[in-house]
Amino acid sequence: MTMREKLAWVCLITTVLVWTPYFVFMALLLGRGALNPGAVIAAFVLAVVLSTAFAIAGAIGVSLFGKQEPKDERDAAIDARALKVAHYLLAGLSFTAVGGVFVLAISRGATPSGDLLSATLMSQAWLLCFVASEVVYYGLQVLGYRRGA
Amino acid sequence: MSPLPIANRIRALRFERGEMTQQALADRVSVTRQTIVAIEGARYSPSLELAFRIAHVFGKPLEEVFQYSPDAPTG
Image 1 (cartoon, rainbow over the protein chains, first blue to last red):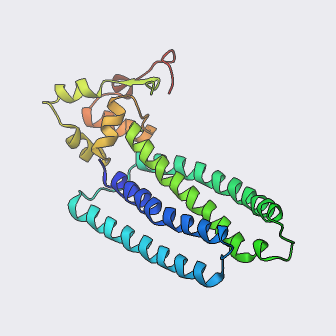
Image 2 (tube, rainbow over the protein chains, first blue to last red; image 1 turned 180 degrees about the vertical axis):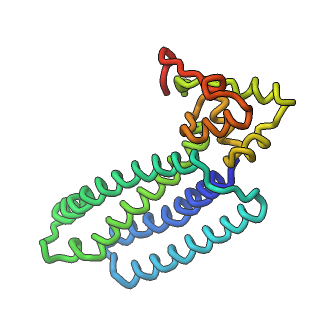
């Protein structure tokens, strides 16, 4: 396994481990009608700190116990393919999220000026799109390396 | 995954060159060993420049190292 494949695994696992509980927590808050900015910001800061710490620890571990290798053309091809898919996914999901939040809010009886159409909910919807595209990006890198090309 | 339409004789040429290892070839052409593994297994088509570099290591013309097989199924 190359160093870059190991780094892709580290990023994939870190992203899933940190952000899955985060969004489960956000869904619980939303279900209870308690999606207030204070709780969201606290959880977000914690998730960013944990994500950064895990990623740094993983990168240090990989570089300490693995062979340092320059990025070659196959690495670049795998990265470009994954990035292309993740880019279109992020663009598509971002547009869908805006409509999805609006439909969710209306179905729960919100008015356009109500709390459910708040900047907090929109920001979480967009963050979910971003994290999903990151998972796909690293997942496709891992898949590319596993397939051999 | 189906093999790509570009076949190669890298494995045979490595053994003709005193059982050169994949790592040794990778170091000579500045790629990872896994890239050589993928090229040998016809799972990755190298760039023209890398193909020339590999052929240069073996001292062979490009067409003696890589062969295009248009009838092969593409992956």
